[in-house]
Image 1 (cartoon, one colour):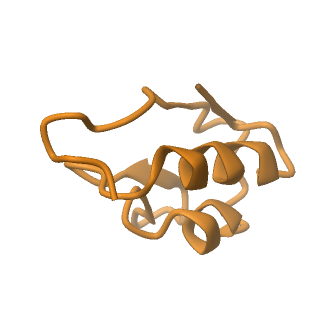
Image 2 (tube, helix red, strand yellow):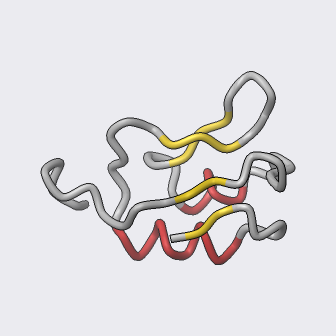
Length: 67
């Protein structure tokens, strides 16, 4: 788990592209969540290992996440 002072890689979310499949939450549940529209949002602060965040970004079938 990364130190709270080092939140890991910065993540951008394209909310127009997000379909809410939830794969980001499966791979990095302490970094990603869904809002009321079932769109991906970042938790503040994120708490997943940077490798898990990268896996979540790569797993997004819509390419809605970027580092």
